[in-house]
Amino acid sequence: MSSYEECIEKEKVSQSPHSPGLVADDEQVSRVLLTPKHVKNGQVLPVAFQDIYSSRGFSVLRLGENFDESLEKTIEDLEDENNQYVGYAIAEVSEVRAFYIPKTTYRLLIVIDTATKVKKAHADIFSTRNTDDIKKLGIKKFIKNLLRYEFSKLFKYNNRNNSSEESSTP
Image (tube, rainbow, N blue to C red; front, side, top):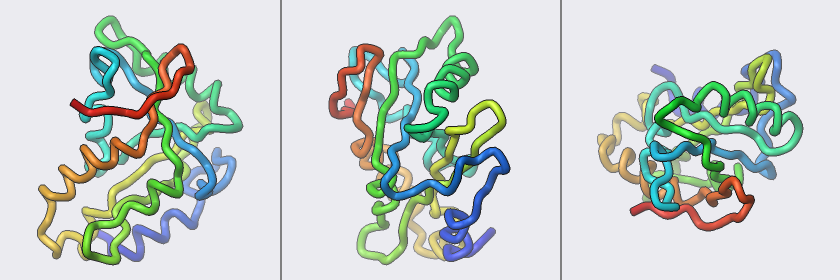
């Protein structure tokens, strides 16, 4: 396990040879949404954001260069007979990085460029909660709930018809 500082430092070093560069605070990232898995009756479900507290990270796409190509490939990879693409949710990177564990100086999230050869706009959001320093706080369940519900509020739902609305969780 790494320290909190080592985790934060990962944002400052490119993680992929296919990356267009480090993820900047003034960028936006999007989460691809499927129905009925992530969206039901027009509402984004908390399950759409549950990967944020996994060790594998939370896949997002950077809006901007290569977004359309990366989005098309992601939809192709994710859609199946049970889940269809319905849109995506957008968040400001600066707001994601401003997410702190309450009453501490610990940032909870990092945003890392993890572009692939076919998805150059790919990035991941990781929680710092698995670092040794955060684990010592003993608030794993609290952080899980914070991420699942509060983090989802940062994202604005943009459906296929390009109408943006607040992401809402039932």
